[in-house]
Amino acid sequence: MRLRTIAAALMAGVYILAAGAALAASAKIEVTEERKRACAKADARYKEIFPDAKDAGVVIVKLYRYNFCPPNLKVKVGTTVRWVNVDKRTSHSVWLEESGVAESERFFPEEKFEFTFTSPGAFPYLCGPHWKDEDMRGFVEVTP
Ligand SMILES: [Cu+2]
Image (cartoon, rainbow, N blue to C red):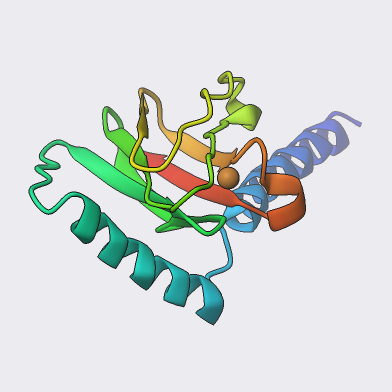
């Protein structure tokens, strides 16, 4: 009886670990050809808008045509991510909803939002106004 309980507990543990890993994997954004093309344009836009940008100490994510570029990031604890809107007329937000972080204000073309990741884990995030209809989502994996 006791052995069975231990076995069941172990199985549950394995199941939870597997579910956690699956969740992290499923939270990653699929990088389609369309997204790659949009992100190449986003990079060019960023250089055009901010030719003298000095991004020392921060990791840049560009927002362009309902994409976060790059959509998947892997950073170390303590890293500050700067989301920069390089669109021409659309405003966006960054919302780490699953982590319980309040949605950012909408930020307009050439504006930015910054967030520092202070604990390791998987951090899927959304653009408040565009995740539903445009599937505008991103993912940050934070390592210790
Ligand atoms: Cu958006």
